[in-house]
Image (cartoon, rainbow, N blue to C red):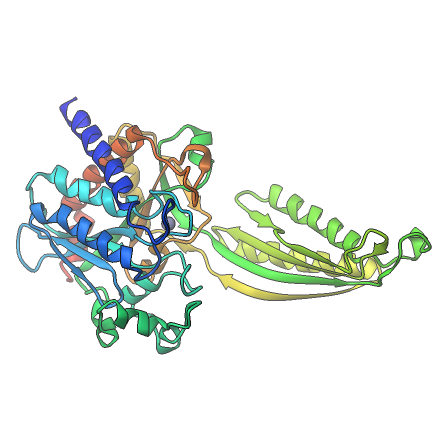
Length: 421
Ligand SMILES: [Zn+2]
């Protein structure tokens, strides 16, 4: 019982620290902390002060990621990376991303000086949300070596390029290659709030992420004939908005009848958009996600064919184009099973979930085995000041994290893998 009380103390501290970091904001009265903004520097200074007492080193790499290393029992040991992002959306909550940086620091505290056969690198990524430059994952992309010159030339609303922003923060873009993960990193683990209602609905404090869903984003246009709403009989119409409505209903039906599929028409524009005119043209967005690419692609193919069929039957033309086609990223099966065991040992029934949103783990998974642990999000609310976490859930996540560290330290697979390091 002593251990669980301690974890609750650590959990309270985690929540208090997330609230402390919320004060480092570009806006007064709300949280906004974008890539390499001045409050990010204060955030780094504060966090570095928290890990220093554990004998951990801190540095900021060339893209502004805060990198903290808690040493292993022996030198030249492999390294476990645990992290998330420190940037936020405008009018953000205090926990999205930040929790996944502060919580592993609590794990270091709970180790109470104990050293493991691997070092632990806690990473606070500089950019995940894509707010300042319209492109996400700048921080984690540097770790996998996929930040190219094209990306560095991208400009924010003030015309400042990523390269210039890096220089203005006092960092050197020529050193970006050195931010890449070293070969001694054997796994990446990320704690993150779920940002959805699934865990709360299932009454589970923690979720074991088995995959990050792939995404298709498309644009559809139905072209018919605008005409008088009073004088054109129903059987002589080519109504682009009625066609769109028929198709939107089918999109929802297809998603409801396919397990794990989510499909959304979130935007629609009708022309000429007048009460007494039959719509001549409609333009619609489509967003389709699933953990299995073949299911997602099959759904997209079906919906494209259906749009063509609806258009043909109604005497309309249909066009569509693909804006994004991002494959699903499965989490590493060995790590997922280890997380499941750790969740069990923390007294929770393991519950597998799919992340419908992208995360840094998706990028890191290109190079190292990766896993994610979701924490229940009250009300499913995120990207909003009302975002929160329960102290009891954070305590369970800490308990789970400590079990995971011990399991990895003693697992034969870990020892086998790290012999090659
Ligand atoms: Zn996030």
